[in-house]
Image 1: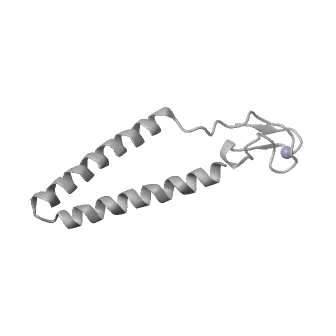
Image 2 (image 1 turned 60 degrees about the vertical axis):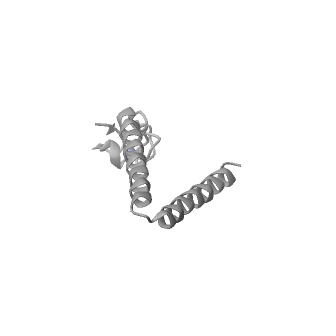
Image 3 (image 1 turned 30 degrees about the vertical axis):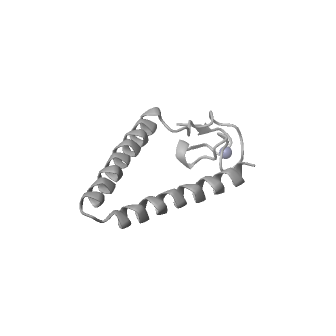
Length: 95
Ligand SMILES: [Zn+2]
């Protein structure tokens, strides 16, 4: 718990600015809090992407089996379009 000598006050790390300074007087009172995303979050995201990707393929396969290939094609086209739109936006922002 960071303590500010000037203000005689304890500060919660989450209520401090990200650079570790006192919100009132600006003195350096602590290390910048670690705001990086933990590795198990990305493990969860990877698992979710794999699971939802598998369910997506199952759904497409099911639609084909039910004789609704046109709907499967429409969903695949929408997915490809949305992915291309997202990739184009992402590429434009990073340049
Ligand atoms: Zn202070």
